[in-house]
Image 1 (cartoon, rainbow, N blue to C red):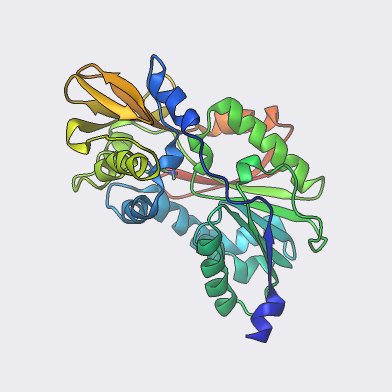
Image 2: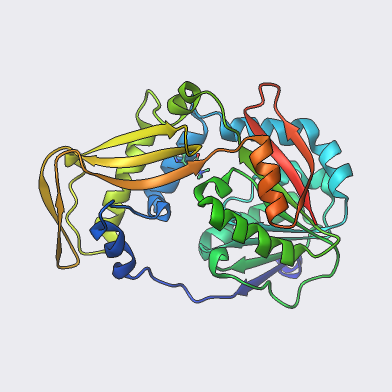
Length: 320
Ligand code: AVJ
């Protein structure tokens, strides 16, 4: 299809990089065992996350969507139209479609590590918005320091929804915002979706759903490790644990060993005591005050915040 070819440009900035077993081993051998949450997302895990986003208890996705739908005109007025939208970790490219009709971007630049999925997603996007120039970038945005050179010029708006920033330690989140600030320059902005601090019982429910989907999502990381490495984790011997750590303002997810056991990983023996856990995820929540001070530390100003009526979730515009 010739028109689609003219509309979609594909930039491959990094060759598919495999995770080195050492990276995982380091976490598994440390005193407090831990695993990077990126190991949740094989095909099965991505499907399970999709199911999570539709659970009654898991409010963030639906609440953020409602904010986009309710305030899309206002968001466009404050962010300004005609910008170049950059989305790190764009996934299905679905959320931005709620804003495109009002934001009227000059171009859209999705960045995602999964190249095939990225191409499928932009093809669907192009069907819905045949006039929109798209520069799809296959890259791990965490390792991406600079954007591709041959992009259209114009003011840049970084779109980072879903409270993905919550997975970063606050110091990492700060570094990340500083990098984005360099990308956007003086006339750009960052539209950031951030989950808010709230009573523990509401957060605990969102990460301990009745149907056990979050439990399956957490445990699936072990199957994923068995698939890509030489490992023999048995999911039957681990339990899901998730709780809100009110001192540190974060949901912690763990996989707790149900018994004393030894697991083999790439020729090494990993010893577990009964009740010992692998820390698999942090999901930081912010108060509005904490968020504006994080922005300030990055040299940014929190220009506007859009909230749902229950103030569960926030969409924020950060500018220099
Ligand atoms: C994709 C990181 C935003 O922290 O809520 C959902 C991941 N983990 N349920 C989140 C997740 C357990 C999610 N983020």
